Amino acid sequence: MYEQVKAIKDGVAVDKPIYNHVTGLLDPPELIKPPKILVIEGLHPMYDQRVRDILDFSIYLDISSEVKFAWKIQRDMAERGHSLESIKASIEARKPDFDAYIDPQKQYADVVIEVLPTQLIPDDNEGKVLRVKLIQKEGVNHFSPVYLFDEGSTISWIPCGRKLTCSYPGIKFAYGPDTYFGNEVSVVEMDGQFDRLDELIYVESHLSNISSKFYGEVTQQMLKHADFPGSSNGTGLFQTIVGLKIRDLYEQIVASRAEALQTAKA
Image (cartoon, rainbow, N blue to C red; front, side, top):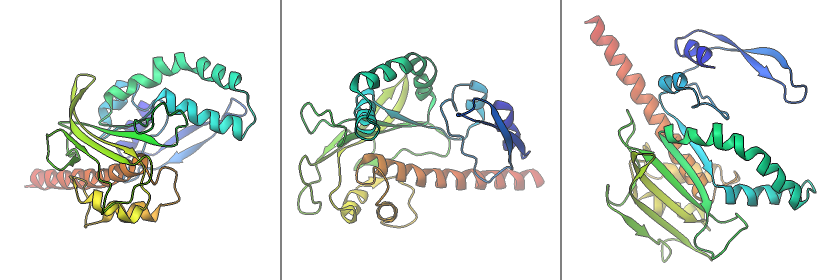
């Protein structure tokens, strides 16, 4: 993986191996030509330090054990007819490898989207209402963390009222500085879900450093993908914002490389 990622970043096409999960064998490779933006997605993208060192930006989606369990029960029991005991056994069988090889990667990520059970409903175990954190590492090149109201302050905000429709259990936001695996981070948190996505503009107007190109771009993107899973809660909101941040990061990297090239020519 390291050799092929480095080759692509150096502008060299590679034959990417394709693993067949049905046969357990390798299918014919896929030719990958160097794109403008290369996205490496999977279970181990940050496991190898050599790969981490050549990534311009990294994101880890951290779904808590409680939420994963609730989702798996909903899917496997309701849709596949599995028993509760078999679901628990399946989770426990995978846990050692997950703890050893996958979970540790989050400490290296520039941004972590952490999905947790809601705190708005006491003893909730359905996983339908979520508390989501956007954990942003400080000091990352070409990346300025998103903040709520006042940068560096500690904020708790319940926006429900005249400008935002909220049915039970409501919506709560929080923001503040923190530490994460020894790194200084800024954390924006959303608990609950939106009743009306068009009213998201009210929340968007209080968020800064979201890298939008015009007022309301986050709301526009959320409305455009209103049918997507998570579109009404923090998973959709923060993934949308991270998408805008990646666009901005790409534009900054391209501009800095062009500037460096001009300087070299001069």
